[in-house]
Length: 130
Image 1 (cartoon, rainbow, N blue to C red):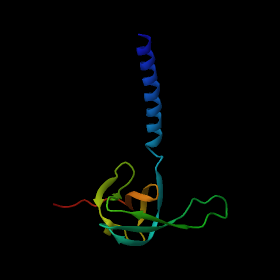
Image 2: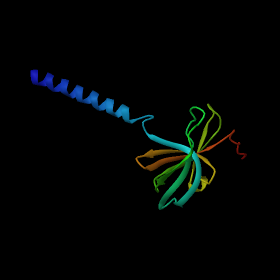
Image 3: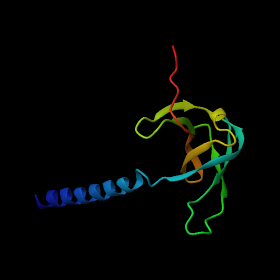
Image 4: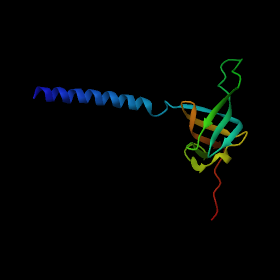
């Protein structure tokens, strides 16, 4: 009986520790880059790269200079167009052609590779007539 209780206690401790690690890995722990597209190289089927101009928040009078980051994408990268105001955001599936020079994007990274690219459009989404 005693080995059974010890085994149950050990299983409970390992399960809770694994759940805490899983909770750390979800949510906002992913790396994100947001800024304006300066260049797009490659195609959606083979992969390629997107160069993004990132402007960090200014602190003090000097502020920070814009930095260009290049992120790689692959055929499995998801592209979306996000439009609308807070509380009424609409998301539509898109492709690489939606990512053009000058567009505001949010890129979610897994390591150095992009998993999601979201093109952010300002203003209300237009209603489609049927």
